[in-house]
Amino acid sequence: MEIDDRGFELGMPSHLELLEHQCNMLCNENDELRRDLAKAKRNIEKLVEINAALTVSIRTLHEQQSQRAAAGQTPRHSVSTWGSVGNLISEEEAASIQQKLNGMDEPTARGA
Image 1 (spheres, rainbow, N blue to C red):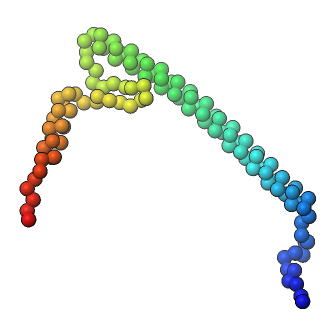
Image 2: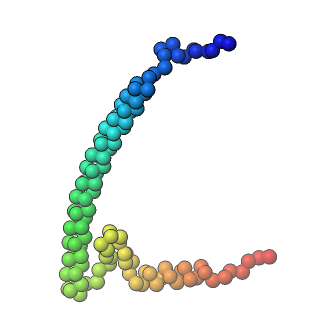
Image 3: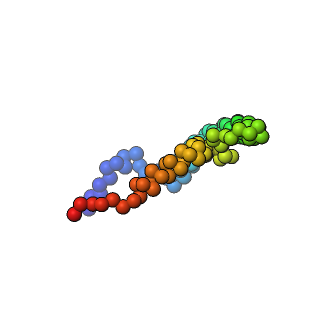
């Protein structure tokens, strides 16, 4: 019986060689993960700085809005602490839009 040994010209790696190869692969992966972690940490630090600047801006806007409200001016819009903008339209505009929407909800006669 003849055994096909093509592809094994360099011989089979020993158990020690297999372990060394596995160790090298894990070390390379560990180095890559450390680089990714350092990059993520820098990104998070930058996002924290951006968030702090936005928080200061929001506080300034709230103070301005409070000053306007104290002076008797009604604000056209407001900014919440989560950064969403609300009340962008006046009550009259909202009522007009609501009337249009209600008009669309009325059943229409369909031809048979």
